[in-house]
Length: 354
Ligand SMILES: C[S@@+](CC[C@H](N)C(=O)[O-])C[C@H]1O[C@@H](n2cnc3c(N)ncnc32)[C@H](O)[C@@H]1O
Image (cartoon, rainbow, N blue to C red; front, side):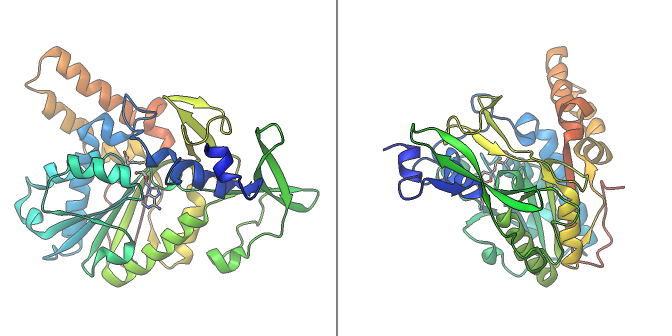
């Protein structure tokens, strides 16, 4: 048995989100379920793996947010989709330099892949950390949720408008055992019910993750109850018009989306204007979206790199600044990656966003 024979055993035609879900998260064949794809030896690299500076800036941001919340005695930090655990490990290392905060926080990790949970547990040995299997386990304390490259790893649906008729993108296994895209006539979901607004208005193409919406809705309830916010870093765009942004990556290069399911990552760009509208409709306060470069520079990443490199030799210094450049330069991750922050209404905290 292989991926195609298992996934298409009973149905030769499955929706795109169903296909992505299986290709990434099938217990047996899913890309994230059988290896660690993150890092130089993997398929792609993420900011916390590039430099500790990224986690440090985020740690300082969390501590400042906690202060703005009135330094509650207990605060929960949640990382969703922690990958190989590098970001959380960096947070813990930084938090322990801030005694009052170090006493107050507990860290909860929500991860879908058992394989990655094992890697995280090996890497993070700390009595501050707990793994949870659903958001309802976060507790009642004020909460700061972090998601780095999480939303782009959720399955998406695509809808295409042709001659006033909407089609949904499916994947079909043809008679020669090849995967092909296939458009199926459909009635659009009731977006007003799902998102509180008409997503299809002024669109000819829709790319849309039901799972992302579910997450944001659950998080919205938690933030309103507990007090707090969510910060997410993802690659994406701020224009309203949606387009086909699906891509697949294997061994640090783009690959053919249908050629090797289970052995390559499948991602999409986040439409941040959609996220902004959704969270506003959910009665949360969303800050203006900024680029990763802007955010990290406002948090003092250049100054921190200068301090870190001050007593280093030339080779070590170049390494620190080379990695810094990858995080903030507009031609590297600085512009393509955006930072989005939403919180319970009334909290006046926007560090890094203005
Ligand atoms: C692209 S990786 C990002 C890893 C990490 N945040 C980093 O920056 O290195 C996406 C992560 O989200 C996890 N994930 C995907 N769907 C999830 C879900 N529904 N619940 C929890 N984790 C999920 C994946 O298993 C993986 O760890």
